[in-house]
Amino acid sequence: MSNMGLKRFAVLMCAEDSEYVKKKYGGYFGVFMRMLAEEGETWDVYKVASGEFPEDDDLGLYDGYVITGSCSDAHGNDKWVHDLLTLLNKLYSMNKKILGICFGHQILGRALGGKVTRSPTGWDIGVRTITLSPSLSSLALSSLALPSKLSIIECHRDEVLELPPTAEVIAWSEKTGIEMFIYGDHIMGIQGHPEYSTDILLQIIDRLIQRDFIMEAIAEEAREKAALWEPDMEAWKRLCISFLKGHSERKGIENEKFCKEVHDILKQSLKEDAFL
Image 1 (cartoon, rainbow, N blue to C red):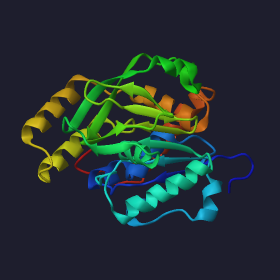
Image 2: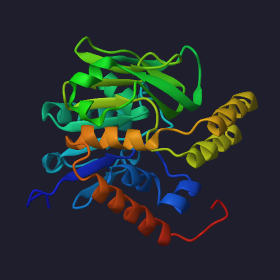
Image 3: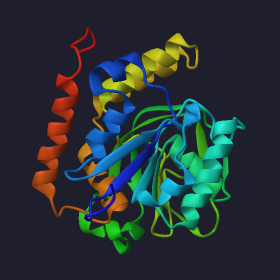
Image 4: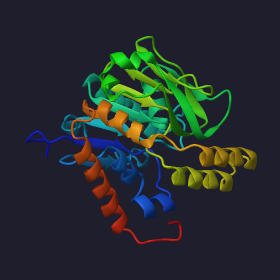
């Protein structure tokens, strides 16, 4: 399936779908497809949090991997977390492109020998502005002509506190010192959620309240931030695609059209519900 020059990617799903995301987007896999999928590609999903991992013989089939967010701790000792660390070491030795988001960012930091722990400043929930390093101009991402600051949705209480010297911090915020990092030219972590839209954030806030993970005061502050600022979803989409696939805008209009078609197909295949 990887012949004829077609690209193939795998999403390592570390979270359970909420009912809202399943009904509106076809699950978190649909959310990532909306951001990353382009015409002519094959995308597979492995529910690693449920113990579903790709076979060793299949690892070479994929051009790149995406690790999602999770309710679990990247510094924890669940069996699937250790199995994921083993897989990441294999992918690293194969020089595979790996993009880690939130928990994915943290588990990559741990796999590389960094330190991941509870944030000393507590939860970060809402829309936050992060600062991009000037060194981005010397990377493959330079052709994107990104601004020096981007807004992104955050939802985490853990963070990468330390990275090995060979990793480079390429973004930070007033709340979190390592918002993004790269390792070589094939590994990148993003602490925020470039794939999230505001409606997903608001639904997650409600779920965190219901499960007593956060206080109402934190939730209210997060809602206020979400009402004031929109995340720079289009810029993040371009950045993630450029890193994962080694190109930027070469098929811009066509890719935009295809991604809209993917979203429309997912939406049409699902029943309208009270959340819409």
